[in-house]
Image (cartoon, rainbow, N blue to C red; front, side):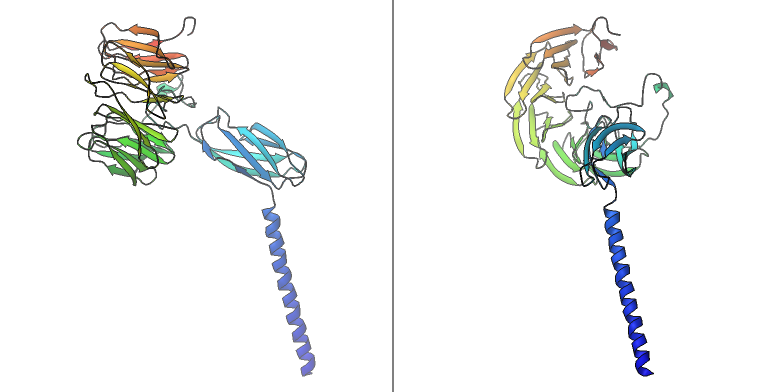
Length: 398
């Protein structure tokens, strides 16, 4: 009897062991099956409308057509290989509003579906939008002349006096203040995320690129700062020889900024190391104008009444153009033309390559400190003395 009991117990233990092994194998196979199910990945998950995105998928039926949609709009198609993989290049629709959108891939034979999320943001990351300083956001698709009158206040945040223009990137608003601080505020709620105290007033408008915020400081600090955009931690600072009123421009791994010591500086964005500097003329040559960068050239105005075009890599002078008075205006570059205002009351349009004058217009009473904006075939600028805003367009255009 004892022997039979032992046999039955051994058999029961053996059955339990087999069951446990089978359960483990089933779980393992199930996990493999789940991992092998339909799924997609995006080459980037955040960007403005019209962003080009690579969609890579796997786990679909072999040699089948897969359609790719953004929300309900079809934006691409591809054929899977023998293993059920595919790759498709899509463009986020121009009409996609700021917010989260669904990218969906659907196999037309297997009916298998996989989803991924893409966040649309229409950032304004630098002074006058970008390094060209056109003052135009081509991705703005919410506000129009028909609905702008309905704008209402969302939030406000109190700091010291503000002359700095805000930058918006990654859901955060960055702005400098006369209380010597750069502020980072939640773009939706206005909640304070962080602030960084420099050693001087901040007139400069910040620029945001690749997770770093760049901003200049005035008297008595005279430094350009590079701060972590998420935490506000200092990455580096660079001391110039004068106050920084102008706004930095970031392009191709270099941050460009000018200073009251008559110099334009080009600094490495990662280390803050000086790559080159250029000194403008001596007549009242403080630089208020912010630099514009386009097609390998940096353009900047000076109070010596000249607009300078410098090689963006070496700092070598390519050309300069003399107006009749101080240039405080920041230039705007669009389609091979540089636009800039002068204290002589003139708005100048110059060939971006040669500096040759293409067109000019003089206001009635003179002095233009305003920086031009170029949008939809129209050039806009304001006049200090006659209190007018001017808009210029080609004949026959409305």
